[in-house]
Image (cartoon, rainbow, N blue to C red; front, side):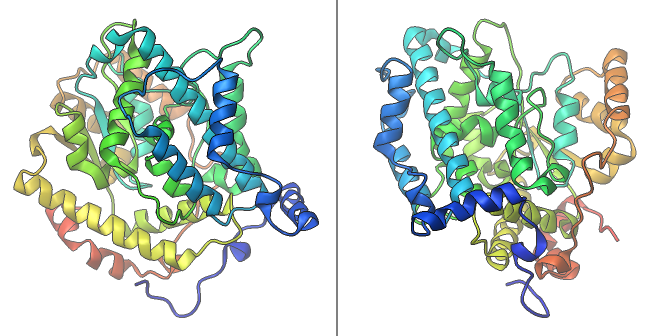
Length: 417
C-alpha cells in the first residue's frame, strides 16, 4: 500500500486537457454519453478491414496458431475499457495498424521461409526502470557501428506499405507518435518521440497481441500478457527486419524485460542484458507519473492510487527478483552488464567503454566522437522538465527503499538526496 496523508490528486487536477481533446470527448454526450457509440472496436470488423486493405488474409500464422484468439481476447478487453472518444480512436488505429503489420510480416515469411532460419545473434537488451538511464544508453549504444537498433519508423512500419501512392511510413509514424503529445503536451517532457530514434520492444511487439504495450495504455480486465509468445513474435519481427542485410547484432530496450528475465533467456539464450540501476525513490515515482499520463491520454477514469500500488508491487518484486535470480543461477549472471545511473551521467564514455569491453565490442575513437557529439546536441529539458517526487504519488523515499532493500544491497545502488 502507498503511504499518504490524504487522497491523491486526481489526474484532472494534475493535467489540463487541450480544448480540442475535451471537445472531441464531449461529442459522446450527443449520442447518449458512450464513446463506443462513436468509435466501435470489434475484432471481426478489424480483421475484415485489415485483410481487405492487403488483398486477403495470409496463409501462415507467423509461428502462433492461436494468434487470432489472442487478438479477439485483447480487442474484447479493450472494448470494455473505460476509454474516451479520442482514446478509443487512438487505440483502434493501433490495433488495426498492428494487425496489418502482423499480416504483412506473415506474408513475408510465407514467401521467404528461410527468413526465420536466420539467427538473432547475441542481442544487447537494456532492462531497467524508467529514469535509470535506459533511454540515453539505448541511443548511445545505437550509435555503435557494430550494433543496430530498430527505429520508431521500423517498429511501426517494418515493411513497405502496399499500393501505388502509399503514404511515407516515416510521415505516418511521426504523426502517430506526435499525437501523444498533442493529446497531452506534458508527455513530451517524459518521453521524446522521433521516427529516427531507437524504439522500445513494446512497440515492436504490438502485433503479438500479448505484449506489455496493451496493459500499459489501460487496465484490461481478464487479459494478461504472454512473455514467451511475445518474445517469439519479437524474434520473427527482427528476422524480417535484418533479412538480406548481412550479420546484425541488435540493441533493444524496454523496462518490461525486468519482469520476464527467464523467458528472455529462453528466447535469446546468448543475449547480453544491460541492467541499469538507480535509487527506486527516483525511478518509481517517475514510472507512476508516466503510466498514469499514458492512461489519461485515453481515459477519464484513471485510478492514480491503484496504479501507484501496482507499480510498487511489480517493480519491487522485479528488482529484488533480479538480484536473487542472478545470485542463484536461474538466469546467467555472466551475461549481465551492470550500469549505474550515477556513473553513466558522470562519465558516459568510461561507462560505455567498460560495458562494451565486457560484451566484446570495441570503443573506437570515431565512436567516442559520435557519443560526444550526440550528447552535446541533446540538452536535457528541451521539451520541458518532468518533475516528480515520491510524495506526489503517496510514497515516501524510505518506503520505496525498504521495499527494494535486497536489490539495493545486492547491487550497491546509491541513495539520491
